[in-house]
Image 1 (spheres, rainbow, N blue to C red):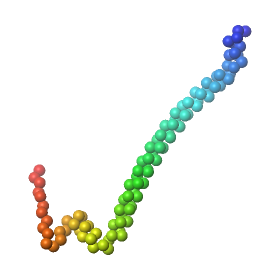
Image 2 (image 1 turned 30 degrees about the vertical axis):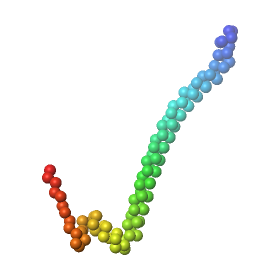
Image 3 (image 1 turned 90 degrees about the vertical axis):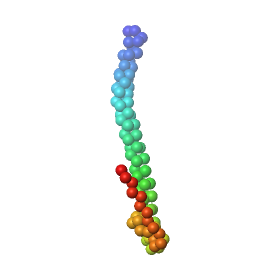
Length: 97
């Protein structure tokens, strides 16, 4: 036998097995990487939502704690309901379309 065919005869099954393992391993790693990136994106999205929710919760808690403060009540009446204190005049600017 020639030297090349003897090498393949001895180690051919190892090479075929290694190639088969690589053929199975590579797509699995690609899928794992894709799944990892999707999950990482979802985690970032949820962390952002969590931060926004915490800010909103803190704002609501501050509003609840301020409900007995007369200045807060006046501010709410002015901004949300459009109430004007005595001695002041409210002016509307009508915009024609």
